Image (cartoon, rainbow, N blue to C red; front, side):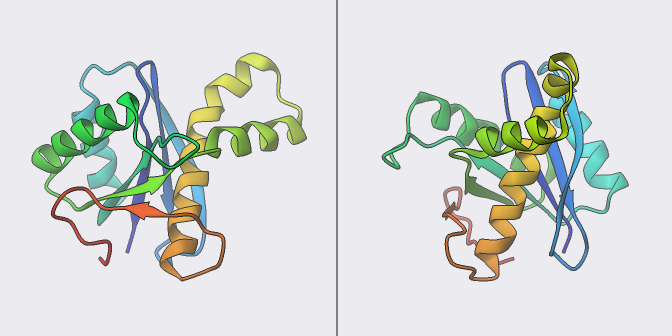
Length: 152
């Protein structure tokens, strides 16, 4: 299956895809703003032959859901209604931190880092989802939207 991960944000939304064998996640793009976001994501779903979406769920450090998680759950409902593909949640705690560390290692300037950070965070989310799906230890937790099962 091909998955598209989404690191949803109010200003920028990062996207990442995986290979058909579901082994590696790759940063794909960063979409600016929220205007036509569902339509833009729909174009990626069509062009990349995406079978399902993985949406980063911003949990609090204690695992509880705050106001931003509710916003993401609402966005998941819009995605499901607009694109008619399965939507899965993946705990995104520390995904931006991990992405930031990787960008520091390669030494990009601050402006270039900001442009790539959200797509790299989406790749971190997708990689954790793929590892969890394979049952690898320490891969984090995934959370289904209401009524969805985590098995594809």
